[in-house]
Image 1 (cartoon, rainbow, N blue to C red):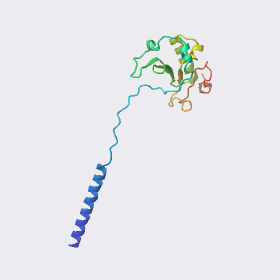
Image 2 (tube, rainbow, N blue to C red):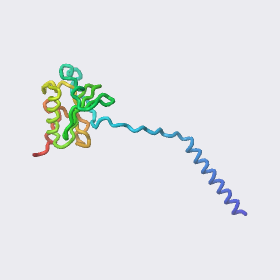
Image 3 (cartoon, rainbow, N blue to C red):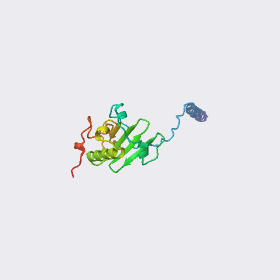
Image 4 (cartoon, rainbow, N blue to C red):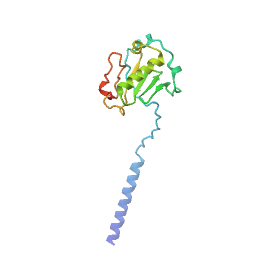
Length: 167
């Protein structure tokens, strides 16, 4: 008889513990489920390289008319794309974003800056006045990621000769 009483008591204690556990989980707030985020651009945003007023001194065609893509929901467009680089225009900030995609970064920057000059019909001197970001994502170069590399012909650029590949 004592064994039956002990078994019943243990079962009641187990059931009570289980009930308490369930109640404690019921009263905890549930974290909201986050909606998936659509990736708009593969580029990293960097700080603009020029004085925010000097870009107003340069005349060039509306970049939106030179786009090779439709504007995304933020008004950003793709101006040129190559295996070595991608050039975007961020209309809200009036910034030209150049992403170096890999390989010889020195050669990629030269090709990208030349392509942007061609698209806009501007001189190197004018290119140094507009708002630009020239960068390499972490997947391309961990050391340079997040830095504005600048145009090779403008002041305060980062020397990419150490990242050039021998021919």
